[in-house]
Length: 322
Ligand SMILES: NC(=O)c1ccc[n+]([C@@H]2O[C@H](COP(=O)([O-])OP(=O)(O)OC[C@H]3O[C@@H](n4cnc5c(N)ncnc54)[C@H](OP(=O)(O)O)[C@@H]3O)[C@@H](O)[C@H]2O)c1
Image 1 (cartoon, rainbow, N blue to C red):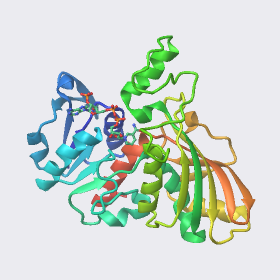
Image 2: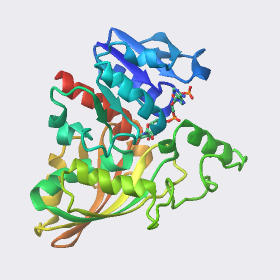
Image 3: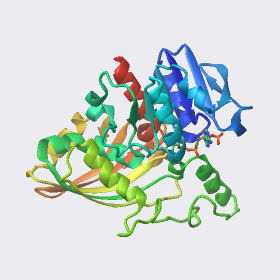
């Protein structure tokens, strides 16, 4: 296969290279694209150095089996349609196309059927949303989810490579803030993205809207609070769910979650450090509130489960490798 990665030098792009290699995707040609300033760089794939090229319109007009995009939404909005118009399949990690009604928003374990024989742009959901819907899609199938209250504890890597550097610099004593609205080292920031009119943030709206689209149910009520924490890798979520049908015994919820692909339910206390580097969503501290409500702690690697691995698993699903 011929694969192109757009945004190859970023947090998600570099992880895509690693995940493609780990999953042994049969690639003959790998092309890597980033901004002009990165064209002197090389990145390693299967032990070989691959030169980074400047992203141009011509680079995405070439024919690929897949183009994996992990750049800012405004860059995706320019280049992904050009790539798709040239007959390419684009799997885009940005928020640019997620809520477009004609574009599938895909977590392959849940709604991979949407991309069978599909050509064009496919959207990868937001990282916090992916790990939450993976833990909950079977619960929704069996008991019907009415309401979700979620508080997130999101790693700085979710805001890109510059954010990782900012936390490290602040831990080293340089308190300059460029990426985040407040100091993040030794702190937590209860705002991710801009605030909208009604005081919900952009990130909170992504969780609300994308969850409804992926679970194909606009009636679910979702109340998120998205918080940035001084963790490098791994998003955590404290979630309370109300079901429409009583589950009575919490073991029924545990069983539904265990039937969900790539979800591990454990009695251990799981932290972002435990989840980082893996492709699983870990559910711990699962507990019953009443016959229709339960609560749990949900942790996953945001760069892998929430971005790179999801994109590669969409590709694998489409070529019949999963
Ligand atoms: N991080 C996450 O957990 C996560 C999860 C889900 C979705 N996403 C989304 O994925 C996308 C990438 O995120 P990231 O965390 O990987 O960001 P990042 O670390 O900041 O990387 C951004 C990438 O975009 C490239 N880029 C910047 N300007 C460009 C230009 N003009 N032309 C071509 N390439 C350009 C950068 O190349 P240079 O190195 O040359 O600047 C770099 O490769 C974003 O839309 C983000 O919202 C991220």
